[in-house]
Amino acid sequence: MHRAILSMNLAAFQMIGWSLLTLVPSVGCHAISEVYEAVPASRLPCELCSEPREGRTVFPLTALGQNQPTAHIIDAGDQLSIYVFGVIPPGMDDTLVLQRSQPVNQRYYPPHGSVIASTTGLPVEVDQTGSVDLPLIGKISLAGLTLPEATDVVKKAYRKKQITKEDSERVQVSLITTRVHRIVVLRDDTPATPVQLVKPGQVDHIHRGSAEVVDLPAYENDLLHALAVTGGLPGTDAAREIWIFKRSGLGDPHAIYPEELDVRTASYRKGQECNDQVIRVPLTGVPGESLPFRPEDVQLDSGDVVYVPRREEYFYVGGLVAGAKIPMPRDEDVDVVEAIAMANSSVGGPLGQSGLALANGTPGYVVKPTRVIILRELPDGRQLPIRVDLARAMTDQKERILIQPNDVVMLQFKPGQSIINGTLNFFNMSVLINPGK
Image (cartoon, rainbow, N blue to C red; front, side):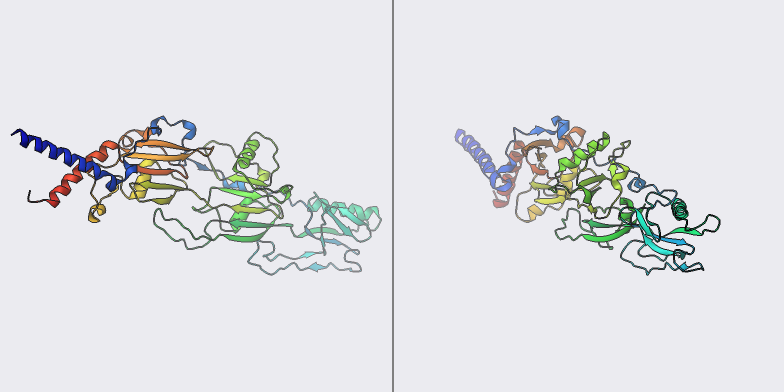
């Protein structure tokens, strides 16, 4: 009798031993490892938490443009028509009508692609000094004047030389075409008009941006019009910010560090001057936040480059779920529970709802894994392990921490869960192998 009881106990201990031995090849050593140095998610410092994406609002899009003046201000590059009776054009008693029609050009922005009405006089271009060269009086500065003010200046100049008389003079200064600023727009978001839908979690490894050269007329040489003529606001695969590379700021060209953009933004908020080669223009902010850029920052000059950067934000999953690289939504938050669901199509565990692991001959899991280890990169380059309990995360909001770009999310078993699953799998396999005993 005692020998029978002893043999039964010995058989039970052997079965438990075999269950523990089957644990390693079935679920892997990483699944039962205890991460003692991991920080619990509920005790994670605020400075290491992710900034929420949801709840951010768009800045007024009119802030990306500039205010239109009540009258055109003459400056270098303007094409003017000047008419002085008997002088410009010389020897003409009748009024000369100058036709100002231009062929339509679909590639560049108007006025180089528009048709303009007629005016009187001969064309004169304002040089880089803001002056025009007129017959009999030489150079005269018109920069900073409106068209009526320029007409008065030309009248006074010819009167001073006693070329015309006040009671019989006929002088007119008109605008043919305004000055333009040639801008290069580089967009790293998807340029194709038909949008292709992809599966959630699919990574686009092949991408091609677009580029355009546009001529922006005066008072429309701003970021708003540059975006409008090249496809509109950035798409969902682009960042919610725009970079402006200034031609005038290339005194010492160098690679741009993210810290430089942050310092420049902070300087503008404090009203300080900052002359760099690039201006960062965010498109969204916290409700009530003031604009992080000045009105003159969105004005574009000839030679400037507008760059729409592509959004490269991913997080990685592994452990008891199939390894994957998953793109992060641009305007939505992803917490740890949603990350596991996105990686596995089910929050319940690595089997999901189809039981494919059993179909492939791998033992099933009666107790689902509830431990998640998140490896988060610190500013100094180190990695911080964060421990999350999925069972508690269902009811405790502190456990549902937000995922950051480049986080590594690993689903694991707790040691007790591994032992239970290994033991139950051993009994199931024993029944299948020896059904008649």
